[in-house]
Length: 483
Image (cartoon, rainbow, N blue to C red):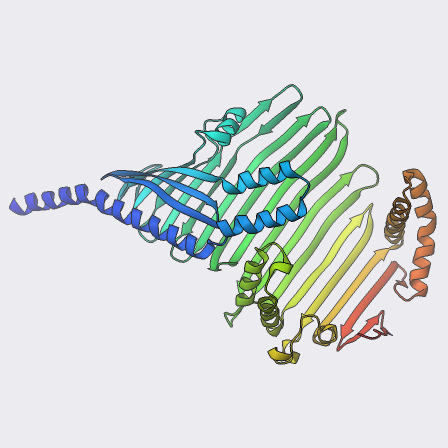
């Protein structure tokens, strides 16, 4: 009996003490994540754990997020240079960059949590974007929603966090326009120790209905399984999809439509652990629009191979300055050299599509021979002859007769419009189209005479090869001239 009483007392003490212990652990993890973010991304943003109130069974806190001073200053310098005469726009940017977002957090301590069933863990939390004042309050009231963004999270003992969140649906009905949104939802799992995140997100419909017409964007989705291995490098796979985009004029006539857009992405580390490969596959089922826009079955792939991870991180960090001219030349030179030394590759295509049932395909492959780089002391980014020696490439294009005529007419029309506008005159669209159609066969004939294209039974084809500093077009050597 005494043993039973002792066991009951131990269980009781554990039940009473466990939430407090879990509360300590949860706060420690939250503080660690704040320190990690600020140490890794302090050149972009700063987050802060404010007003943390820890009780025995629950806690509350406010998290603030703002742009870092260095990022704000660099961005404003770029804006001031590009929009020197747009004082109002500059002030809007400044207000946005100087502001901060607040998130309120309510934390329930573990180890036992009751939400969608009983679960074990350090705790659970509800996080909401604070829209109780200022511009966010006015936005929330304008949309007529109880909140702008809310997330529920469960923290496991192993460091895994399960979460789901949403932005609520809304409808704004005014005299001249109507905005409807079905709501945005997301869910996933993130691990704070290994940087891995599994994520799904999407919404059904977003529409803008105005006097001039209506645009509807439907079926947005994203799924991803990623892991952060460096501040600028995520490995894993993801897919972004969009079911349709439809734009109509005031009479309900279609102006533009796109169906089934998808983008698949994959990033993996090679066996050396020092370089990554990045793949992306784009596809669109159909695009139609005013005039003769009628494209079917567009697909193409992009692949970057053997990208040096350290150099990639350096270049991404440099790019955050906004301007290449602001990057110290020696830092840029070192990063480019390291990137080229890994012998990276680039592939584009095959690009396959049909325009008004006419076929078109193209592709490009480029590789760098890093073994032929000189010693770093002798390396110059501006050495054109060196790049021609270490870069090998192949490109091709194949198209039907009608597709070639369409593209030649488009090229001719653009050249005519540019020439007319340079002279200060206004181009007549009908006249431009007529002249462009008449000149298209002549342009194609000239391209064939110059060796740029070859005539085939199916249409036109062309190829370019760069090897060891020499260029061939359709198999014929092309002199490069002095460098």
